[in-house]
Amino acid sequence: MNTSSTIVETSLRVRYAETDAMGIVYHANYLVWFEVGRDEYYHQTSVGYDEVEERGYLFPLSEAYARYAAPARYGEMVLIRTRIKESHSRSVTFAYEVLSQTTGETLATGWTKHLCLDRRGHVQRIPDFLRQAWKRCDTLSNPEAPQ
Amino acid sequence: MNTSSTIVETSLRVRYAETDAMGIVYHANYLVWFEVGRDEYYHQTSVGYDEVEERGYLFPLSEAYARYAAPARYGEMVLIRTRIKESHSRSVTFAYEVLSQTTGETLATGWTKHLCLDRRGHVQRIPDFLRQAWKRCDTLSNPEAPQ
Amino acid sequence: MNTSSTIVETSLRVRYAETDAMGIVYHANYLVWFEVGRDEYYHQTSVGYDEVEERGYLFPLSEAYARYAAPARYGEMVLIRTRIKESHSRSVTFAYEVLSQTTGETLATGWTKHLCLDRRGHVQRIPDFLRQAWKRCDTLSNPEAPQ
Amino acid sequence: MNTSSTIVETSLRVRYAETDAMGIVYHANYLVWFEVGRDEYYHQTSVGYDEVEERGYLFPLSEAYARYAAPARYGEMVLIRTRIKESHSRSVTFAYEVLSQTTGETLATGWTKHLCLDRRGHVQRIPDFLRQAWKRCDTLSNPEAPQ
Image 1 (cartoon, rainbow over the protein chains, first blue to last red):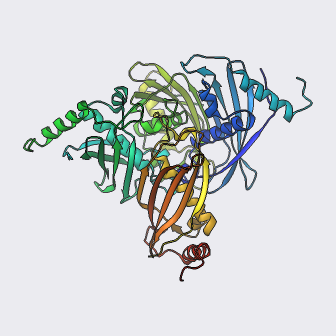
Image 2 (tube, rainbow over the protein chains, first blue to last red):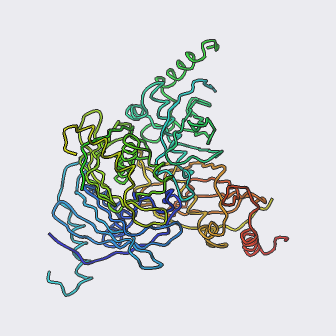
Image 3 (tube, helix red, strand yellow):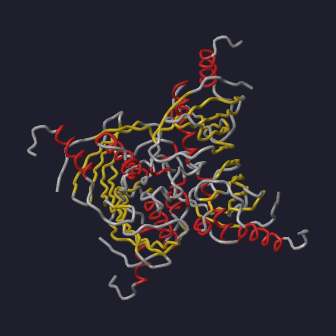
């Protein structure tokens, strides 16, 4: 098992479409935001997830968890901090923290676990170009870590 | 151009996920409900749209229009009435009316225009099995219409 | 802590809107389906959740978990089985199972934990009309259970 | 009736959540993107729409129209260009163009018409702070226009 200390940040403004009749962001949309964070993680550390799929690999979710700490509201700027919590040979778990950019308050935390599949739906080893990219950026962000 | 007098009805209960911070159904979700109505139209008059796609035909939207008359709220039962407004050799336009099932009030009306494509994205004639099904159910619902 | 053996079932047809570019239902939509199941649980055992809110109680999520076992596809009929996994004085946890209605295969399982709040956002005891309704239907479904 | 030549641009990366089983962006999400463009229009020309609501004004949609020219795909960067097509004393119509940022190709165009309401749902004149802001930025962007 590998863990990684690289944290990738991205921010977004809450859309009206994402709110519900309670006046706050509908809970399922945090999973969409986790995806936005994960997407940025791919972009900043290796290649976009669109290119990962073009190379023949899919990373569907096998599990998802979210903990809601405080509500987000329309118009608010939120920050999503994404890191790899665990990576194994055939699966990877991303962890997320969603914060209010105004107050710094944590709005939600969570994680998603993904299996690496090929196009026929068979479980595969995570390809080297991803594994090395994730390892490299980890070393850069934490230069004194033993390799 | 053909018009059709067959009207297919389906109902649904408004989901919390479909509301927004104004306390009413978010406007884009009416297009999703139009799809629910269209889906039922395919099921009741010919074959499910899933089978249409399996047979190699796609009907992506080329245009959509919605007029919002009154808001829908969480928990409400709504009725969707769907009919074919116009069908041409290579396109079809569905029209929709969304009503409150409690009050009978019209909540929204609209239409969507669809092109008939094959899997490579080329425009095609609407296949006979759809054309005939739509014509047949029209004759049934309007037996005195000239054929 | 109370558990309940009452299971409420509801079914739905997968909407095109709920699918993603992998050709399967987008993972966050399972949380929406959990809500559809929970909604039906309220309706069948006590009053609709809309009426719960009208009486001044809100049950926002504090946690959510989903485990994805097999993909759901457009047009498929799915069954959602909902039960109360745990209820405490101020919180309730619902558990869900989503199955393919065609094959009976489990597509996903999960749970959501909810706090009972009043309109000002303060944590409250779950009101008696809900607590008793949930207890009553439990007794009915499991008549030999000690009360 | 007033028209405006101010065009406000904003861009976004297509989310996986926004795609459907056709492998392209689900059509209803263009209305959400129109909202993202409109939101940015409010921000750049006057105050955020969240503040408009805080001041007691709501602008629900009375009509929406979209024309789909070419599909958008996951991972793509799209540009949304928003302008005021028409403003009357009690309603405003925004027009939108969605383009691929890579190719410059138009993906969709459309418009949404909004009524100005107060919190009780009564139709109101568009407040001066909005009317003047929209007029001012129009003058700036088109300095030779007669006032």
